[in-house]
Amino acid sequence: MQFLDLKAQLKDFLVFSTLDIEKIDSKFHNQRLSEWQKKGYIRKITKGYYIFSDLEINESVLFLIANKIYSPSYISFEMAFSYYNLIPESVYGITSVSSKKTNHFKTNLAEFIYHSFKPKLMFGYKLIEYQGHYFKMAEVEKALLDYFYINTQLKNKNDFIEMRFNIEELHNKINKEKLKRYLKTFNNKSLEQRINNLLKYINYA
Image (cartoon, rainbow, N blue to C red; front, top):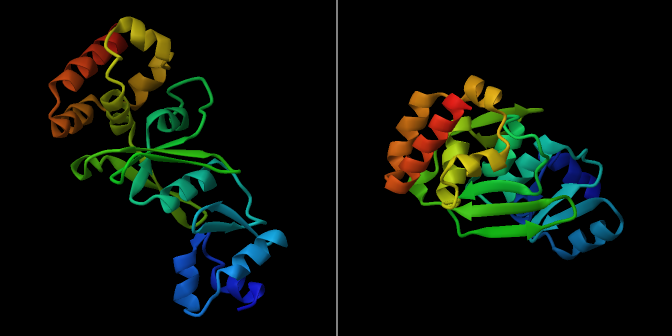
């Protein structure tokens, strides 16, 4: 298979895998991928996953890549906070929830970080469209629960102050009834107490 043939076949893919290629050409030799990388036609993200070199990289593309290279997964934690303008700082790494084991990939594009959750906790995300493609992003309420679920040391007002939450944005974007409904699924008394403390902090900040 020639490169132009591959690109024509995968023109609708922002990220593609060796498996995607094999579906088109079962006799494809992976050595061609190395050749095309050297020629600057494609870029390797991590083992088995590639993008075309002329792809414009932005935040939405990185989210799509994050979903693709470690699936099932969705964007959450600090990255979701930044996406919803809940925190003022830019975030290091694309942080996600996955039902696979905890993992991370350091690439030339970004660092992709995945925290392992039980399958029953793989909910509370929505599909966001970008140029005909869709990435999975935690809802505000689920991002908060995910974050406090793994950061058990965050318990009181001083901890919340250090996080520098945009309180006005939290007030505007959080659905407290949904938050409490999602919280029940975790079935975690410690998390419940810490989230209640957070809600008190938000109400009186």
